[in-house]
Length: 497
Ligand SMILES: Nc1ncnc2c1ncn2[C@@H]1O[C@H](COP(=O)(O)OP(=O)(O)OP(=O)(O)O)[C@@H](O)[C@H]1O
Image (cartoon, rainbow, N blue to C red; front, side, top):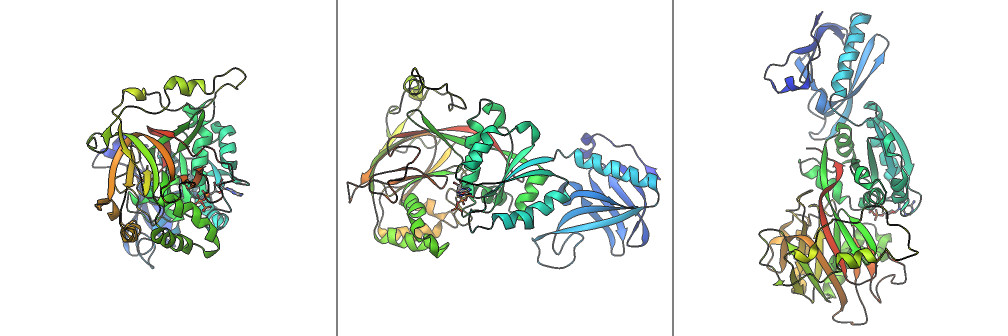
C-alpha cells in the first residue's frame, strides 16, 4: 500500500500535492488504483479513463457498507461522474468502492474523515421551516431537498417549524447557541430578519450575532439567498442554497439599525416607502391571485400614481456627496435615545443598542419631497426577479438608496420592467447613491392629505399612516420620523464564495 502521512492544509497551496492515501480498490467489480490527494481530490481510473472528485466541491460525506465505502456526492448533471441531463442542475450521486482488506478500509475512512473535517464545515444546524412562507411549500422543500443533503453530509439538525409570526425571533433570542454551528431558514426573507432580530435582542448579542445563518429559498421574495447565489453565478435553487450551507463558506452582512424613540428594529434586506411599499403590502388584498397580484396591483398604482410629502436626510458614502442640500443632523440625540428607555420603572435594556457613532458630527444632506418612491437596499436582489440595487454589496457598510421624486406615469412601467435587470437605476428619473445613515420623515399623500403611506421593512409593515390598508393593525413603529444607521458586516451568512 502506497500510504503517506496526512499533511497540513498549507501543503494544498503547493503545486504538487502528495497523496494521503493511494491504494488498489475494487470499483464496479474491477480492481483499480484510487488516490486521495492532500489537496482534496479523489482520483481513479475507470472504464472511461481518469476520473476525479473534488472533496470541497463535490463530496458531501461517506458511509461504510460492509466491506465497501459509499461516497455521497453532488455533481452537475451532464458533468462529473453523472452522464445525462441538462448542465447546471445538481444531482446527488453515490460513488462506491471496496478496499481490498479491513485495514485498508479503516485507513480510507480515517483519511476521508480527516480531509472532510479539515474543511471547517458545520456539523450541527438549527433549522427553521416556515410552512406558510411563499406557496406553502417550505416543508416539502425541506423534506425533498434539504434533509437528504444534510443526511448525506452527516450534518445533525434540529428542526423547528414556525408556529406563529415572530416565532423564529423568540426562539433565536433564547436558543442555546453552544449546541449549533449555524441556523438555517427554509423560508423567505421575513424569517431571516426575525432570526437576526432575535440574536441581537440577547444579552450575549455580540457573540450570538456571529452565528452563521443559512437561507434556503421557500418564501415569496427570497432576495437574500438570490443575492448570495447570484454573486457566484449560481441559480437560486434549494439544492445550491443547501450546498452553500454544507460547504460552510461565509460572508459578513451589513445590518441596519432602525430607531424611533426607544423602539429598535434590525433590517438586513431593505426599507421601502411610497410606490414599492404600496405594491408590496397593499397587493396582499389580491393574494388569491398568486404571484400575479404584484403585477396586477402595480398597474393600479401606476395609473393612479401617488406622491408623498416628507423629507429624507442622509450621510452619503464617499463619492456621493453631491446629492441633496447640506444640512445638520435632525434625528434624536444620543442622550434622547438613551433616556427613552432609562426612566425609573422601565426594564433594563438588553440586547444590541445600535452602532455607537456620533451622528451629529457626520456630513448630512437633505432632500425634500414630494416623493414617488424611497427605497433603501442592503443587497442587490429584493426578490428572485427584482435586482433592486445592482451595486449593493453584502458588507460595504452602506445601504443603496433608489429614489424617485417625480416622473411621468408611463415611466413607472419601464421602471418596474427594468427591475429584473437592474437597468432602472440608470434612468434620468432615478437617483441612485449609497448612504451610511438615513433619516426618513414620512408625510401624507399629496393628493389625499388625510392619508399616509406604509413603511415596509424586509417585506413586513414597520409603520402605517392614517387611512392606509389595514391601518388599524398594530405596528412596531409609528408613521413618523425614523433613523437608520448601518453596521458594517455585523451578521454572518452562509454564502458561496
Ligand atoms: N406558522 C405561522 N403562521 C403565521 N405566520 C408565520 C408562521 N410562521 C412564520 N410566519 C410569518 O410569516 C412571515 C413571512 O415569512 P417568510 O419569511 O417565510 O416568507 P416571505 O417570503 O417573507 O413572505 P411570504 O409570506 O409572502 O412568503 C414572517 O413574518 C413570519 O413571522
